Length: 360
Ligand code: F6P
Image 1: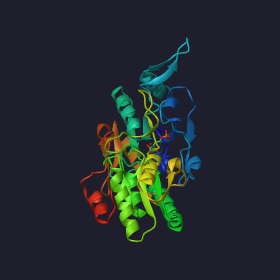
Image 2: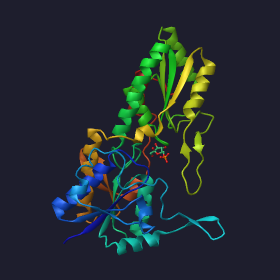
Image 3: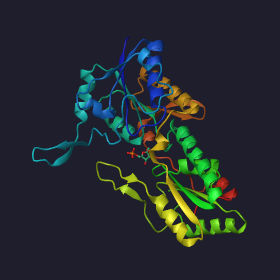
Image 4: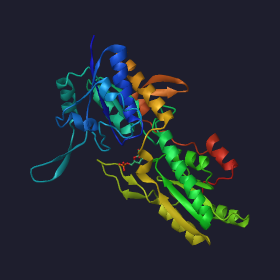
């Protein structure tokens, strides 16, 4: 039977989202003869009566290598907490989930594929409880979803961050400087750990291991005594000192998650005051989310998108595509929203320590 399925991209974007959309469109069309429409701006696109985007194989064919998402994404779109302005000008949070369900019916959608991170999956799960037929696709550069071995976007972010560290290394060497690189990752240290190891950092600071800056200074001093005149420090945006808290650009509230950032500058200043060294800080920011996906991310995103269509055919509502080893499986969304963090006592951190890297 012909179906009409919708796809949306929720949360922050990640390189590979367009490859997912393309794989959904091509698989739906070629393997099942189904029609696909794109919902703009995540779940918000189902609330404001926004027109949908007809996604034919012709429209989708050149999306594979394109960064971002042609559908747009909203990092703060939550149908259960929609910001609404009252007549007196004040703002309240309104549960608009039933409007989403109504809109899905109006659009004659047999199913919805939602590509997103933990926030998108949490919203999708609750909509499934209200009767929506949704299959999830995991996305985040942070690689912090415990239900899947890896998420697309992570590899691209890792390449970008490692290239940045490689570049910082050459100028650090010329000027005999300590270079601090702050990377993304929210409350998980995956980007920092892998970038730090891949780029030869001397210290890596991650949220899972609160740090003592004296340990970092001692490490750099010891390197200086061996004749090494530069050092590289990678700091995850969510890292914090043993006796301190995470640094936010904007603190969170019930509606918005806080925006982490700035710990790199605190670390840089602290190193400058405990050592006789020039220190420079680079906050890499959204460069990590932009640009073309790597071939590995295109491959993973394509597999995820195609599998999601098959899970729609199997009516696996409330499930998300996940990679376990080499296999793609459907995991319940309640598993998908659990956060995956670096194990401070695990093999990866131990290996890094054996390379001489300190974690503060
Ligand atoms: O979750 C992906 C991510 O890039 C995090 O690493 C980062 O903390 C956050 O999104 C940034 O969000 P925004 O795009 O809203 O600044």
